[in-house]
Image (cartoon, rainbow, N blue to C red; front, top):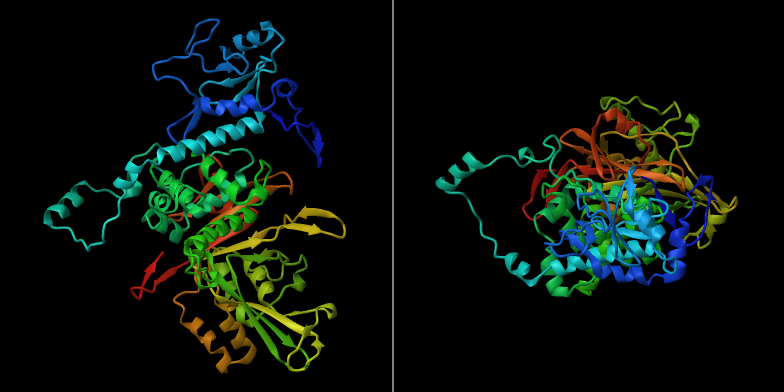
Length: 572
């Protein structure tokens, strides 16, 4: 069943895309009644259970029936927004709700009704679902109120923390575990073939950008382990700081729902509302950029920690909050004077790496003896080297990102040794690797001169395993100066002792379609199998399907994670 849209204005064709005509009956209902009925219906909504589907509130013993035929078993029962009369709609046979709309007095608009069991707007005259922002806002607010009210004080008593004590099972407990325990992934569920934690996310209205990033975050190993080990307890956080905006609490709620074993698609309405409050400039039902959402969400988690601690710590340290503990790295920027060789060095924290695609011409691609080992890695992964065929690769994008760049005459920098502005060379490198590296491919180009934007649909090859050692500052400095070590660069030698510069791919966020009308999908790699997460649908796919997709964001995790407290290494 198609859905007609009402944006309070008519828009037949935008950027070549044809949209349906807005429902005239819904517009007439707005003209007669305004938005008050939609705001008032919030008190009539019931969320069952908290976080689930919205429905019209009624007593548990009350059974809604059609006022015309008295039938209660109809798949669709609608309550009139004007008089609350309940009527049925059984296409293509009978539609008592349409009869109610035509036979009722025209003094009040009776064409708009609401689904009793699903809380969805329906036009009785058009016999089709319709969409209204004010009504949808009331439903989202009802979801939020239900979730907050469900967080009762008794839940705090149930989740009270206790002091940690080392535990080892005795003989009786060991026998019970051996005889009764089973691996968590083999537990029975509605779909035993899917690993635990794979659960679809309902699209709440152009929210595929949010769903795609959330699916990647749910299966980011350090982030998943942090929330599932109760390192951020939403009940404790709310009791300590009061019920207020906290994206980490909303993430904790979603991790519990995603890994509970339920396979029914989950609606992240509470998180969407909280994110809207944090990023009010992006609060709309328009399609947003997945990368922009990712940065905004991490910033929201970091901002909340800063307010709680009152003394903000630098995100480059990676210990200020869980967001930066997982994703934060440090970039090094060297600007060298071409007249005297003086080098100015700056360090900047980052939570992702935004990379330009390589040029179309194969001759313009960079070849470096320090990075030829990547072609071997690609071939090991079943990919042919593309250094001379003009196909963009992730390693080629990283080469382009870290190679020296001559700044133009209009970008001369002030040399402290020459005491004048000189032409210079700039080179980027990675001072500190994050636990999880997110690579953002710049597929959306904006030209201020031509006043236009476009999407770059060029194919990108990316490996399953990636060695980041050639792009570290220590490797860049060694290739520049040889094996000499300088006192002022002594800290760079510490990067040689990093436990692992090798990363494994576990999630790919893709974008299909045009700049203003596209769709985001996430591919997850779990237990050496690939799964496609397309909003509410989860399907298993082969590796070739993933490689053929237009990668927009790639997530890599370190093969070996280092725990400073115990000075031991553990695999991810």
